[in-house]
Amino acid sequence: MTDEINYQNNPLHGLGLKELLTQIVDHYGFEILYAYLNINCFKTNPSIESSVKFLKKTDWAREKVEIFYLYKFKNLPRVSSEQFALSPRDRIIPEGQTPREPAELSLEDAERMREKQALKAAEHGKTKSYRSSRSNGKQGYSSKEENARDKQERWKPERKTTTPTQASSDNDDDPWAKWRK
Image 1 (cartoon, rainbow, N blue to C red):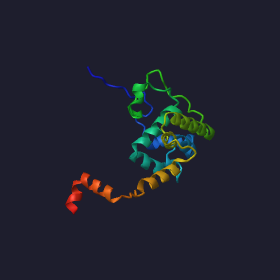
Image 2: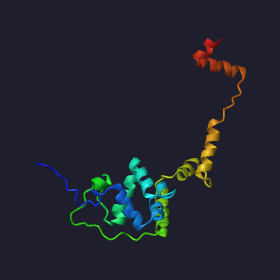
Image 3: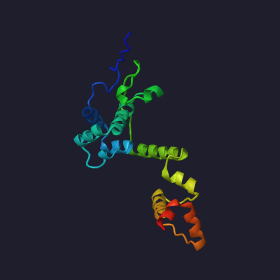
Image 4: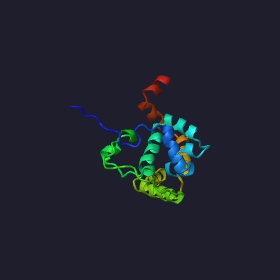
């Protein structure tokens, strides 16, 4: 018995990256793509050729664009958790599901989505500033300020003032100190 999987129902089947990107850019434009995906190739000197070149080299970015294509541009319903674990090109779209009209997206919706994701990440302790403020008990500092402060404290040489009696007790613990005499 062969377990052949029919990928014919997957909108990504037989679709090249350049064609996929061309369809998305023609419909939404680079500004919307950057707002939703936050991939720098859509912001800095965007072009189809440079974006394709970057996406071919970067698996995580390519998968992000393919997921956007499936669930925003083709407007397919969400997949099961087993299918979500697979890459977008390996997913099996059920027979009854067909692509619909592209979702209407706006820059305002993208901003709301980012705020919602930031709140969710903060609740789960995924952001640097949230973890730092919890562990240090300090609030009101940005993560950059905290990082700079931590580096300064970490690399400060510790100054020890020892009395002659302390120095001899330190040498007793260190076998190499006796060798140096």
